Amino acid sequence: MLAAGPAINGIGMGLYIASDCGVGPRNSLMLALTEKTGKKLASIRLVMELFVLAAGWLLKGPVSLGTILYCISIGIIVG
Image 1: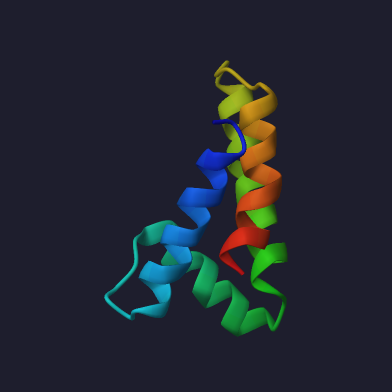
Image 2 (image 1 turned 90 degrees about the vertical axis):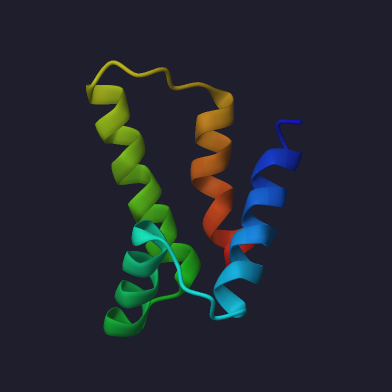
């Protein structure tokens, strides 16, 4: 389940973006930064997820193996 969660979420996110039905705020930011900077989508998403992970940790949220796995893998899967 730990590996299937990010995989299913990433594939679904990639299909939703590719279908051009509109995207949410974080995905819009990801796509805009990818277009503006010319960097790979996986790199942009990794930086975004690391920022959110750090913010959650600073707010005393739980950080565990699943959180870190999602953070690292979601950009690669969506890309």
